[in-house]
Image: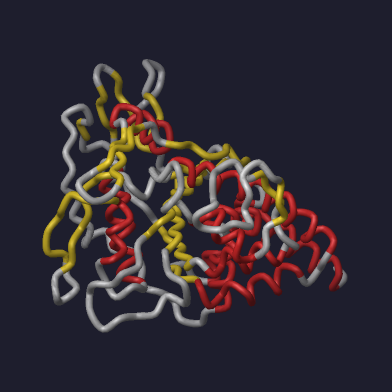
Amino acid sequence: MSDSDRFSKRIKLLRPLIFCIAAAAVFIAAGLAGRFVAEKQNPISEDSHQAARSDENLVVDDNKTITVGDKEYAIKENIETVLVIGVDSPDIQEKVDSYMNTEQADFNMLIVIDHDNKSYTSLALNRDTMTRIPALGVDGVLSYWKDGQLALAHTYGTGREDSCINQVWAVSELLFGEKIDHYISLSMPAIGLANDAVGGVTVTIEDDFSKVDKTLKQGEKIKLNAKQAENFVRQRKNMGEQSNLNRMKRQQTYMSEWKKLAVKKLNGENTFLFKLLGMVSDYMVSDMSANKLSELSNNLSQYTDNGIIDTKGEAKKGKEFIEYYVDEDDLRDIVLELYYDEITQNSTPIPNY
């Protein structure tokens, strides 16, 4: 095999991860950047996750099945999950000298990979979702659970790996204690860098940005520069709709358009991938090793993308901030769809090895 053929094959394997960059305004490309990080980050510890949520409608049996109403489900044994976190930080995610920081997780998307069905599904979670979040004490150890916005879980910890793990715990808690295997965290400068790497993403401005960025004129179609792209993806304050729901719609629109441009770049420019990785690598924190990322990219290159699922719920004005209350019946159905298979009369529960 020639060097050119080897390079083309490598690009093909990596392409699905690059497509997913859009998922945090830069999704798994940041994970790919982790291939160049020599030190393996701290893994997520199952033992340290003390989930506290209880649900009388979800009854878990010892043989890895659950009962919901009059139906029984078996947990999928061959799924893998990655939480993509977009951190509201204007720079590199620096480690602070205490176990409290100011960086919130403004973007949370869980990627659920089903290796048996060779497919993956993305679950978008509203950062304003009211749930139980783990609070760390002065020694960095889990102290207690408190009610709060999902985004605030990341503010516990030093702002690096421990904050990401705390965010993983909070999302797992929201999803009735289901396991999350890995995380990729990106700070906001990655948005503009990824935008410029594809020559600028073109979108129609549907919201009123007049108080935050006068160059984003409502009703116009605009090719975004780096700063405009960051505002388009991030802004919600001083705008008509401040509940985060409109922002989530803009993020998904941006992801879709970015992906189209990235495909063209990958097909026409051999150095595009490596340039992009060099741009975003400083703004990423992940627990995945180079070997793990390589395995993941190889799988996704052959799997079907099932798209993005949004949770149903209601946004309300709280005492200080917008609060989003998820429809738990809907969320339970989503968890069952992503994590479980319904057991029929002709099927056998998975044994507990």
